[in-house]
Picture: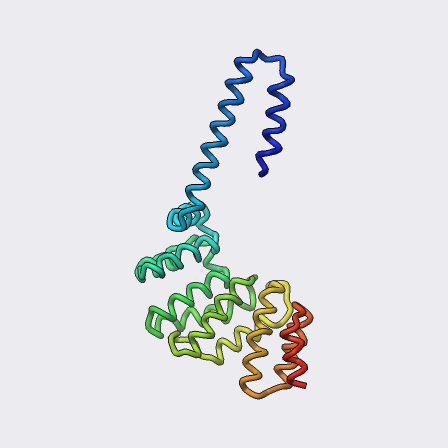
Length: 224
């Protein structure tokens, strides 16, 4: 779609230019061929998840979105060693980001012994107080929490998951609104499970302020 504006300009130039017709035809044809080649290559990449994950990871080594796509495809193939290499040999810019470190923790607690998971958990406890984090952290930690409850995530306790979410639930410049919403959603369910309705109501009210919904309103009425 952005190329439409370019082609309006090209068409205007081709009609009004005083350059000889044959040269106008040649230049317009070259531009058309270049656009068609780009269209073909883009469509080929976007239509093939395997190719897309390889290209985007190569071209954007600091993109966590590209990394997550690649790791999900490796997981579908059961390539455990490939997943471990992917989260261990990353762009240095990702190493300081809690969003990525939670992704690494998601892989580590599933595949590695507890002794290798614990240092990463302790590192996250520190970095979560100093580094910016976004919705990826909430999304991945919610997945980790479910597997901790199911007993399939080694080296992380339910109490530590709660502490991570408690940290994320405090408004701060380093946490996105969507991440704070993830935190209050988890803590709301956590405290309902613990039968602490005062804490649950506190998180429900804040969640409703961030993202008003009928579901949250109904929960608040139920608790009252």
